[in-house]
Length: 295
Image 1 (tube, rainbow, N blue to C red):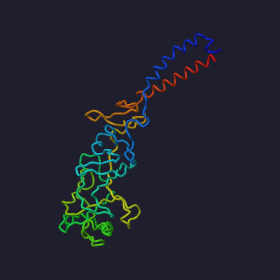
Image 2: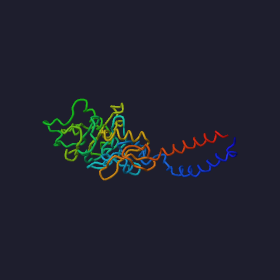
Image 3: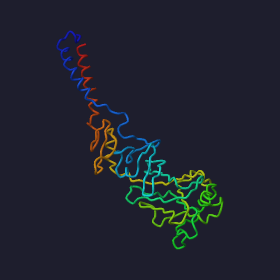
Image 4: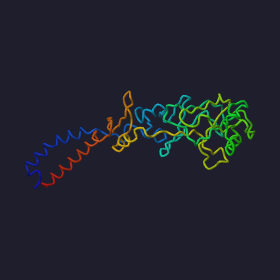
């Protein structure tokens, strides 16, 4: 029997069509990429970081921002570019534009890591002070601030670079003005490296040798920092599993799950508009099945 030959079926379909139109038009359009971008330039941005205002965790948003496609890290001593983020190890690498490398050596300022920040400087960093005066406090025989032994090869490697002329030194000159620095405050939050106070011309930080310990041109220059990833970790996982992005809202920076339809919740995106799509689909399936009964 065709639906046209059954007035009851035909009438029901006509009555249901306006309801179906209203229901489908009530479904919000869902952006494919959501409201929080997951990249800044070429760097993947995941929680607790954010590439846009209101995304990520507020304690990290104070220090990290995406500016014109560059992920920047700010401290009391300046603004530094983030060259990489390794999420499995919870580490970021920042580059100081005034820090020396083998190819370019220049006068440096200071690097300060705020005590209140959720970052700590890692043990991977080898901090090298270059062009230090003979009266520098790092050479105080009672302090033991300069490493000895195999670490001295790092000084000899840096002084073999042509770039050493940039701080007024002779290539392959004596390494007596170089110090592989071991800070008396130790590594951790509140770390401060005041190069001018230490009476040195410059500094560099090496977080790896790249398998080429004998070639300073191939060393990994930058400052490796570890971050605390425990901030709202469980709440964020619940949010992301429902298709949302983790962020914050309000003056107190309370946790917010940002859904793809633009809505914010305190938990997750379940029932926040996305699933009305499934309601429409289920209704269509029911209508088709109902229609087929009379075909």
